[in-house]
Length: 352
Image 1 (tube, rainbow, N blue to C red):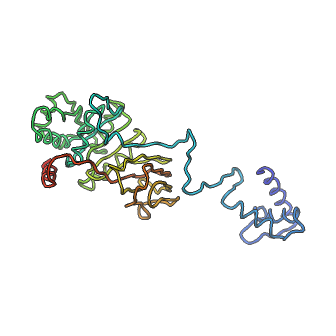
Image 2 (cartoon, rainbow, N blue to C red):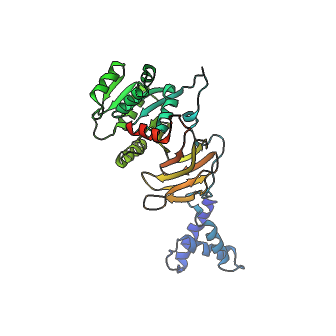
Image 3 (cartoon, rainbow, N blue to C red):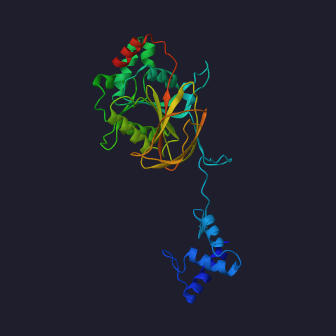
């Protein structure tokens, strides 16, 4: 069809020039509109002089282009064909309590503890994930908090429980006595001098290069200084291609960076939601979603323009299609940890 139409257009353009046909304003003798009108006179002499070109132009506008044809996808449509490039994400491993004697290791996973207060939510998550990760890293000053948590609990068994495999960072925050304590426990201490990256990014580099993990769970990193939070989001964005999944957990939020493409996210609404959000990073993103109260149907999200915050989960599976990286975030609630009253929990969090 395209080869035939190109031949007709070229022939009509030559005839228009030869016959001195004056094109409409804004078009040339070889333009599609001008040439189609010339063809219309040849092939439809009895019909209305403007019927064929106008209907053809309307059908072609925004749909077909010479040199290659395309039909825009309908907003809100998702490729559900087998073998599609949809990436699946799940967070069940964060909340599942393993049965006694069960091998519940989260294979290929690093747990990274960041230097923010260890409140009851973070403490619950640490207790649930600690023994199941392949490698555990404390990012610099987080070692002080973990040390206090271990000794606040009391008892040698509890203190031994929270011993990481690695302490990493520029080591400007960790106390000397804590360095000595963990070194005596056989913990590897890595000082990384790199002013261009924060302690999280240094830790991600260590677990990828030395341990070859493909998933990182970050406990903390939210709820402290805002510049630290944004530095952590930037570290996630810079490392998005090196891991299958990086999840950052705060006292009330879960955060993950989604790369450009199509994603299916399975959410356990016992722990996640109801609120969620989609926030563009790097550059504006055209986004389509399914499974939210206010679904996006191809709108462009960008800073200084539209962002999706305070949205609501309406299904256990959310589909997202994006043309650029996005922050995906949901509210987070974990079961009571039995630590006592809210005043006691608040006091513990402040102490840690």
